[in-house]
Image (cartoon, rainbow, N blue to C red; front, side, top):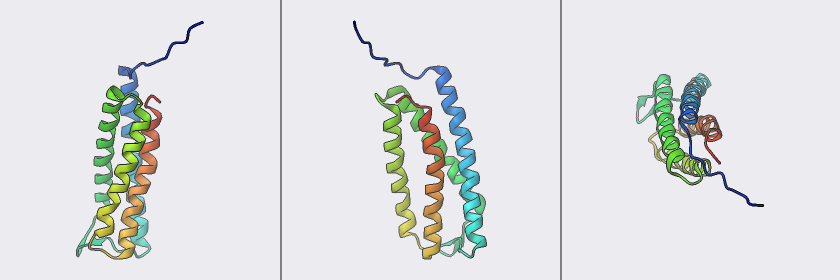
Length: 137
């Protein structure tokens, strides 16, 4: 009796599913980060950074942009990585941690910094698992 390993790469249909899932996750994450920012602002947390206000819509726009960059990373990993899901999760978790650094050193109050970091974590919690599920283990 012989055993064969299934080493198939992502097909066009799975790339399509990956892209659709990534876009839906990006939209959901954008809405969630805008909701978190709006709730924080309503609770009295300043959205000012270096004396300039951050518009609530800006949270959504940047979340969508960086989520789509993550989707490009996922598509490339699905094609070239030996273990796309594992590599994607490790890469995006590391990038999420790195994304917190500018918030820590930002010219803003402690509440604003915490709110900014929370929006990064909310977006990552939505996008990373959704996209990872579409990648081969």
